[in-house]
Amino acid sequence: MTDTASRLDQILTKLRALDCRITPQRLAVLRILLESPGHPTMEEIYAQVRRDFPTVSLATIYKTATLLKGLGEVLEVGMRHGSSRYDAHKPYPHPHVICTHCKAILDFEELPLAELTQAIAEKTGFEIRDHQLEFFGLCPACREGGSPT
Ligand SMILES: [Zn+2]
Ligand SMILES: [Zn+2]
Image (tube, rainbow, N blue to C red; front, side, top):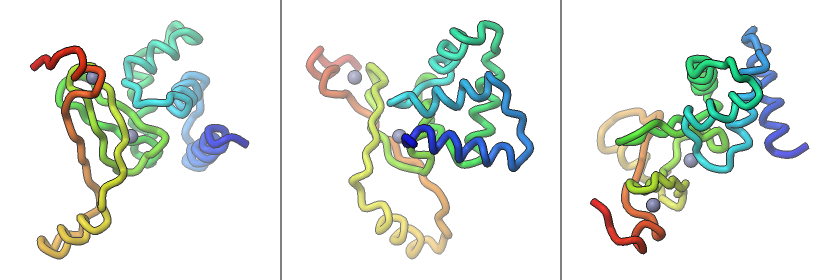
């Protein structure tokens, strides 16, 4: 079984165990999330689902994404400007590098996060459960094209 197929299977099992109705539209959202190589927006997912289900609403897409987020199967990446992006490949908190010009978004995991988290916990007395770390700037392609502000 491919990664995508086994993840899909896992998530469907979880949804069934929770008595969630798995409509063809929900399944389509789930598939697109798992098959998208990058970090799609809800609008991008909506456009793709509509090819097969022309009557689907954006609200259905959001509800499905919110459900999956609640289950810890999708990570929402908040953008300062523009729509949130969704990562179903790595549903755990991880740092992103984001181009403010073309909105390209990359995962960047080569950071000593475990040590950082531990240092923060020790210094503040907090029990750290989550983090959100986004770096904004210009990607190499946008830097080439002159730097817009
Ligand atoms: Zn760019
Ligand atoms: Zn990511």
